[in-house]
Image 1 (cartoon, rainbow, N blue to C red):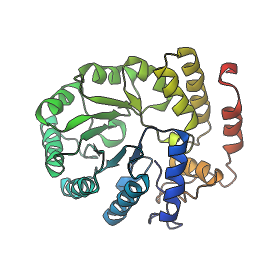
Image 2 (cartoon, helix red, strand yellow):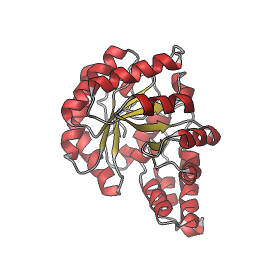
Image 3 (cartoon, rainbow, N blue to C red):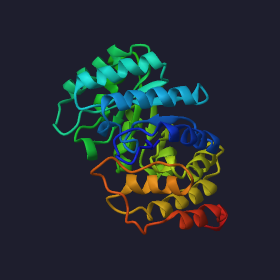
Amino acid sequence: MATPLHSDGRRVNHAALRPLVEFLIEAGVSGLFVGGTTGEGILLEMAERQALHEAVTAIVAGRAPVLLHVGANTTAGSLVLAEHARSLGADAVVTITPHFYPIHDDSLLAYYQAIAGAAPDTPLMAYDIPQMAVNGIGPALLRRLAEEIPSFAGLKSSRPDAQVVRLLIDAAPPHLIVLAGNEAIALGLLALGADGLISGLATAVPEPFVALARAVTTGNLAEARCYQRQVNQILELLPVGARIGAIKAILTARGIDAGPAVPPRPMPAANWDAWPRIQEILDSSPTDR
């Protein structure tokens, strides 16, 4: 889920949160992941993150699972957010690995154990995106997390390499949930055994992702392939280096005031308007693709 911001790109626009949440729930999403990569959580001040988490949890009011991203580059910051998420009754806390500095698996395990200790009754999920964070969750660490943390519930992996994600899926004990974050190969990852998807683009264009997941669930592989092609066509329209700004521009074109990206992350060029083309893609029959 994107985070609507005021024009300064620093403060959450609470007036726009309810329209966005309602838009996503009405589109049929299975849950909301708040403050993740597309949600720009790690770029917001602590008070803004807490206020965002409070507001979304209250708006959803139990109608869908709410996963709150509590990752920060200090353990202390993550602990504050995890404790706060527990107090809100979050359905799960999700935590990216500490980023920038390479960290040994033993230290990553200790980090996740500390987060679990701050919210012991709340399911904990790891967020695996080493191409951005430097540190990732490998198969061996995933097994240790499952064995040594009672509340550990699974992970979201946004790795670009399907073969590596397959190793994580294979390594996960049966009780863990594995969510795929790579939109361009979403169908392949679901076919390999991922339990679901978390997509940043789906915050603005949820329709093909919801349809793709439903097609897989009902065993309609041909239809699922068509929706995957729709997703990939839309991905090709996003400008390089301005993905989050473009996603927010699409939301704004759809009537939801998402505001700018957090500075210095750029918005797309002023004349960029992909929504008419996206509408054409969505309106075309999937069987024609």
